Length: 401
Ligand SMILES: [Zn+2]
Image 1 (tube, rainbow, N blue to C red):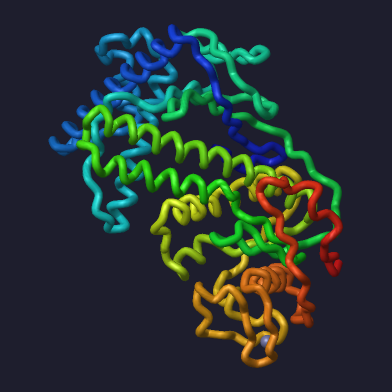
Image 2: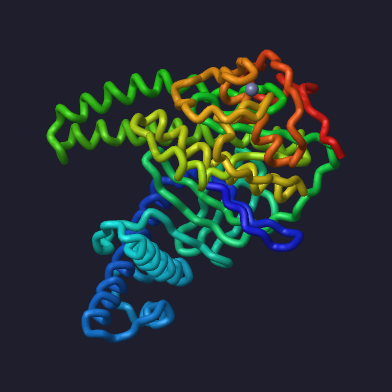
């Protein structure tokens, strides 16, 4: 989970690492999460009750109640972490409220058996070497697979199906990169991850073919098991691990790709995905498509904060007709469908890869450059296994400025 928030010459980033608590520490973590859940449920109860009676209740009110709250094991949880439970509860309440406003069918907030995170905000933690020390918990080994930078403002401990993670929230100085005088239009997609106006294609990892087969087998096996049975849970856990594995692989990959873009280009033009989704609708039926779709927003978020930090510009352009317009003559081919992988222009006869054509239109929309004839270049495919750094240097379009 990487997030970016603007703040003058600094930027707030999240760094996620695997952590390896000892058995004893793990028990403390789990216990703290259970106590947190009790606090959560108790506050939720209080809020529900107050509202039923028509009384106004605020986050401040419930926060003040925390210190008098009688729950077993409360002394096992760092007091500020408990306050964050209150924040989480109100965040959930507001999120539910927002959904209701959009007239979505939503239920009530549910009680929790266990909270999935422990949130150390501002205090109660210390990092020395590869050890993280948490107040009330103890020392935990961290695997820093990439360096932790900046001033750490908080740590979130998280349990997932594959293990434990620490997410450090740090304030990092911006590091402007030297200008390269290059700009690029990029088309993000589900078929290919990225196609650029320089004719570079970065494919989605091949790992999906294998994973999809495995997933199908597991899902079939799951459907034959009795829901809630021990075997059912076992298979379900396996499935969850598989998903997490793919997610991690993709995150890593997207980090590499977005870093490369930010190093190479002063300005990067992309489609505004929030609009695109409205245009194309969600057609993510398979797991593959689902994951690939979620990658697009991940790609955008990584790209945005990296650009922000490096003093680069990411420009979002209107996605309407980027695929349907001929980049050579400007003709709009209204009947182009998602299945058409090649764009053939009925007016000028230009025949070109659909996504490359789109990337050229995105470049034009972003840079504001006038329509100019484009020669077809063979696309350069970059497969997942070969990395992205060394492969396609030197293929670039100079900016007009
Ligand atoms: Zn044309």
